[in-house]
Length: 191
Image (cartoon, rainbow, N blue to C red):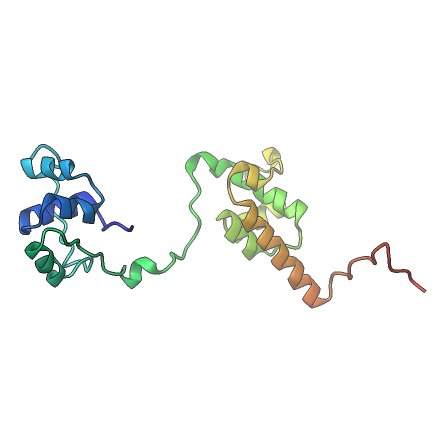
């Protein structure tokens, strides 16, 4: 079951502004009824501003009124807004602790998979084309210390993402006619 955005703040608003039971609020917010009671008593969530789920299109006012009239009914979360459903565009975030490993991963990809495009490497590792070029022509500021290491082992990308990128690059080369067909199998004989 999906939960509303900011469940504790939503629970604060529902306690203050509605006549819903603790069980109804707990079921909607994914919390325990005793935790809702503690919020109502002021023991928990002190200083948290209420988050209006009606104004933020998470629940309708009619649904709240319907549930206020019957304690056995439960609130229903509305579909997520389009903004939250869209996949975020932009660079891939790399934790600070792993950023020093990124040049090693780039060097590994350039050495092991030279047919990958710069755009594919950018997408896999969250780097820039400028950095890739500097590592390729060994003008990177730390080029003397770069040792090619597998980005999957370093935790910079998933093996499935790497496999997908390599297979896409292989398909592109095959379409362009740059890769010879695979060698014949052991059962086929050349005449």
